[in-house]
Picture (tube, rainbow, N blue to C red):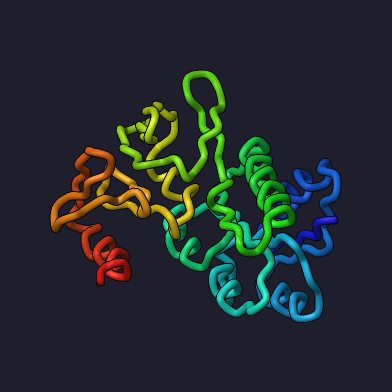
Length: 236
């Protein structure tokens, strides 16, 4: 059984998440609070698997609550504000859902969570889960499975992206910002307003561009420092 805690200062938002969970087998809402302080107190004496958490709340925000927790459950932010996404993923939250949250989007998160749990049970500790991780993305009229380890880089083009692997290029009907949120920042980094690259696929780089599989990718001015700092750990 997957025990869930819902924290949101808006009652309709709490009831919506509860209604989505109630129709799923093996998911149980053990508590629901309208503020982070009560949630903090509850978590000092109780263990949950999933924490559905709003960000903008009185007194203590959801982000502040997460930072206080030493033994965290899987945290899924449910918020109306997109601008906190970067800070949220720096705290290694499991997912970030922007209101209004559709049932389809919610179920994608649950599917991602169940997949993570299955892989955690099957893989020995020495195995890298990233090698087995994948996502489904809309390509033409189908949902196509893409293994994360195969991605070289992604190019954003307004309302869709071009995703490059070593064997193909596919057009995915999602924005680049969505891809940035979905991909683990331990393995991928945005280097330009129009490009995300897989760190382990970088063959060489200079102050202005990156080379991956005979492709030259520009480094944007505002992304240069973060990329350089990230790559410095690999430079002898």
